[in-house]
Length: 122
Image (cartoon, rainbow, N blue to C red; front, side):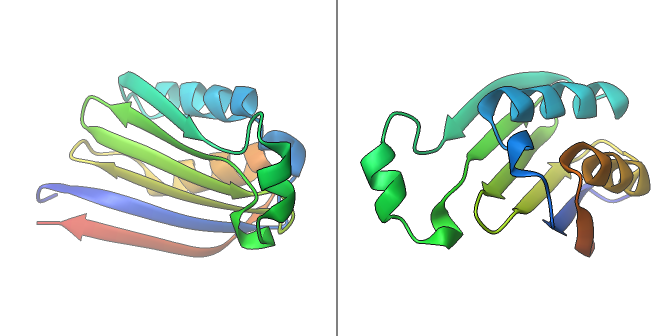
């Protein structure tokens, strides 16, 4: 492995009930434990407490975005409530098993990965 790697997952037909802040935080905790990554800061962006703005937003913007910083880089997630999609990026200079991550992510969000890209960073 060079500098590190980035796993990019696009999931469709997911369960929007898993798109809450609480559920996403749990996903990060379980994922980081599973792949032995040390969690640091966690930040969210969504329409929490902004119902009027949420209603005006186009479907491709209605959801939650979060970034879980880890000691070796970050994990980013974007969920789309109406479209039932999840987009995940895991970038780290520490090795991990991409197949295990994909399978866990599909199971957790109850969806199917329609695109999976692994980028080796050099």
